[in-house]
Length: 305
Image (cartoon, rainbow, N blue to C red; front, side):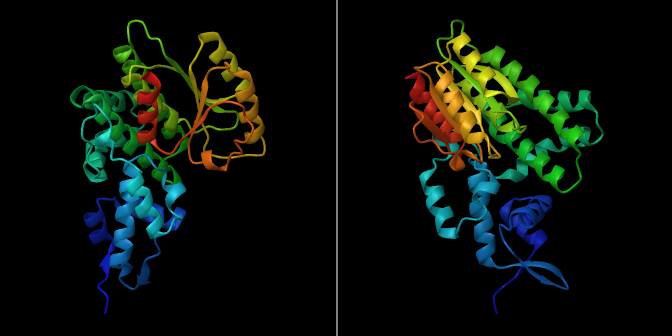
């Protein structure tokens, strides 16, 4: 008889929190454990799948975009995506979410109490002791994921998500000021189109761009593409990065309008879970699809060089 493991054992083996395991099962059907009178029971093949998913999420993939893939597809995807530490000049990043969540415990506790000042202080403490890239991968991304999971399972409300967004915007501002070149030659617009309120992805992208010596012009979420294009023309941006999580009836039209209206020699980069669902034919300019933040860093390096 095949060995089965309870959820707490699986949490220790995979490094995923109990809340994360439950959310991945309930929301994305990433795995379907056996239900018994002793609770959820996981087999070795399900643990292996969770480890694959965890590694891919640590490398910037959204769980919603990969949860439905077969195991073999996950393995091929993992082989094709370089580990974050392989990016030139980058410090090593551990692919284990558990230490990150332990570091974030004071921040999350303060957010749960709506103590914005204490949460910001705790985030600032982490920013002071971690290397900038580690701050993105070990703090910002795990914080984004955990807030999303807690919002979905009802343990956090929208107001708390907005509190975290504001903290990360402030952190981004500090990082941009710290790493901005004295005479930046490259500018990147970052925004999401109208109706798209998820800004965490472009926030993380802006932080990494600033560390790559590129000046991010962060416009935020839910912005008409005409405004995005007008700003790109005004600042002579070389790249417009558009974050798309949810694809609507107007998404293709908006992307086409943006491509037609932004500076002629600028590149259009598209990231987010909805990137692969957008019709990008006949846009008449260079389009770059960003699979994850590692690919963003690689494109930033290419663009600078």
